[in-house]
Length: 439
Ligand SMILES: Cc1ncc(COP(=O)(O)O)c(C=O)c1O
Ligand SMILES: N[C@@H](CCCC[NH3+])C(=O)O
Image (cartoon, protein in one colour):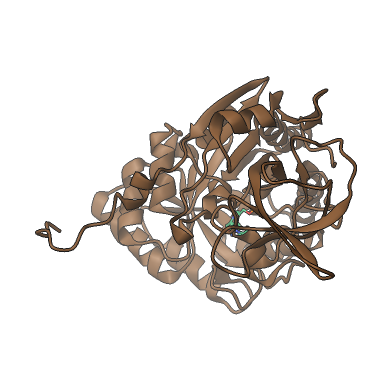
């Protein structure tokens, strides 16, 4: 078993996370269950912040809450003095309910509605990351109508192809996100924004993609952006106070992955920005980053109970669990790979290879292909690692399966932070036929 954060095996042969016995947590909260190692999230947050401090760079580390958005998670981010990236009215609302300081909230999105933008102004958030011309116009109109200033970053696409799954690439020219740096759109957006009386352009934003292992893409992006900033400084007298380099730092899901320590990505990138800005005679901007996966990904595990077992002789053995693509859509969507162990028998020797099937009515609902395991029985507990990012946040009710609860484990204490959905929750939006319609 790979050593993740506080993950350990106790003398009963049970997996332990944050000092919490996973078998006991499953008995208390039921399965499936998401369990988070809070100490690991804190360690990662501090690692990022310490890297900036060590290099003497003013920074904001914004948790990309799309990775796992909940009131408790946002409160944890606040405890660790992170900033927060939200990408919808729903995430912003959650942040408000969590009492997250508005001035440290950054609002993203490639098609923000006028209502969402108004909500951002009402909340008095720290900055809007502007993605397109329509949004820029709307922000200009809203700020003038209210007489209320708003900080913005312009999201640019630098034309970088990072090495990752096509669906999670974002920095390439052919992308739905941002203003293109090479074809003049970014400059046009900047020129328009600089004329808006209540809009303050803090600087640029760039996010090249997600689950990236190499620093090359980030370094190339930084080089291109700083080159452009030097040009804009000369021709437009524009100086970027902030450079937001996004998130995307890869984590280890399986033995095939070999990431750097999350903070190490950042250190290399900052050093590059320092040398490039110096070379171009620019002031060192504040550096902002937006990690999601690298803060919460490997801090989360999902615990399932094993159910039916189907052996297709000489072909494969299917071991079904009580969840699947409804609580983790990543294998079906990106062919994402995971590792897992039997949480109630971690020390038992590996005896067979099985494939872990979800319970949804889809052949594609397979969580793991060809997993080496001890011989599993119905009623064992399977702990699947690294489900902390884009697991709960992409969970759904396909087949009307209720979403599992989320528990935070820290120093031996298990704290329920999202309760299990009930069947009543599932029908609470349904309106029966035949009753008078109110709306
Ligand atoms: C704009 C932006 N920032 C930050 C992130 C977080 O990325 P990750 O979870 O890979 O760190 C994403 C998601 O890819 C994103 O789209
Ligand atoms: N949801 C994706 C990554 C996209 C992140 C948002 N831009 C994943 O699970 O890997």
